[in-house]
Image 1: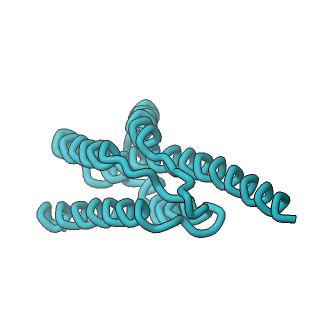
Image 2 (image 1 turned 135 degrees about the horizontal axis):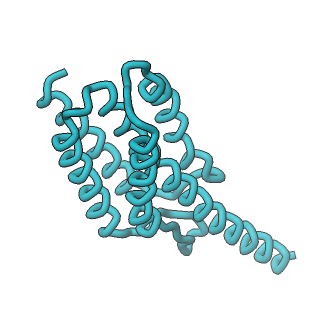
Length: 167
């Protein structure tokens, strides 16, 4: 895969994430929030062979640094992802421009690091970048799910209270 096709794929993925996030601000989130966790499974399944690739030669400290760097990148995403209960008793993602700025900055950082770390070799670089991605997507999605569930419980409490008043 040449560099231009790689960049086009990454830009397409970023555009898809931003489009889905924008849509979530205007459409209620259905169900009990399990859909928030689905991208974890879609990411984990193809990531395992890349990380466990025997051609990926990295020291243990490099794996730990990649994971810690991912955790650090997850902090702004966690802080900018919130949910709200609107007057129609549905849960929506909170409108937040700083999320988009944070998301773009993370992609820029990953591009810069990719160019800087070319000396690692393709397999090692791919495995470490997948580890970074898992390091920020896993905590972000899990905390987002917990935030959603907190609002969901609040909504259920309000609905039960309204039903009791009507009886």
